[in-house]
Length: 127
Image (cartoon, rainbow, N blue to C red; front, side, top):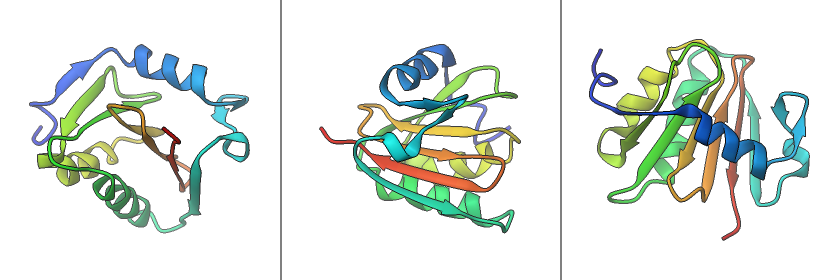
């Protein structure tokens, strides 16, 4: 369904492999307290607010021609790539899927993670 039907599909294992190599883990989750870079965390109880805040955080980091990669950890059968042109609609549509969501800059300079439990984590990585 639009806006997701036209997105470039990717093997999500490359993104998950990169995450596992570059972030400390606490079980199956990122150990945010041990990451390097500028980290922000929100715990949001309202069901609609995490989607709006995540879309805002992704949008703030996008410039002209930016590419974002997304993977989900359960229902999404593959990762997708999208550009700044349709980012808000795509982020909103992806967050309708009940799973943990990982949005990453193509150059890996930032990551936005949204959990089903209402956690939103944003990390701007040092270059």
